Image (cartoon, rainbow, N blue to C red; front, side, top):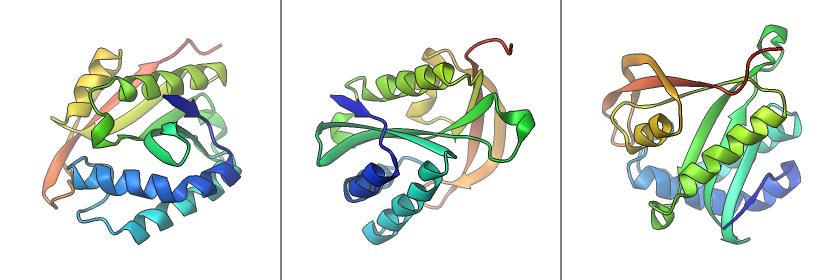
Length: 176
């Protein structure tokens, strides 16, 4: 499996296959901010809008694929913009693995790639939120993330039911 960190132009080229990944992720029940059924056009628009954030340096995206035309996984880091007191942290967002690639270690690999790149870029603290009780929680816990707590009824899952969300953090290094 190849993992790349596309720039904005390459991300734009990948929006079709990323839209397919996003619609599959939502259709399989993962809570990544969308309700089911997610229309492919809406998914394509969402990914296209991320290109500006990548170009501006507010978002870093990694994609995983066996064939360059079919992305099977992705993860992103959202960097706080315009907050000088927050330059040391980032939010891990949209870790997605296509249902045909789940259970292969791809999610763990993408998580490690994002963590390593963040540390190399001087990020010392990562945080994320995920649906409480989701399979993703096992991944984060066994990858050294620390649970902070949960918000009740924080977000609707793809079926539209309100679900709690758990917040996690991971310290990558001490602040200089």
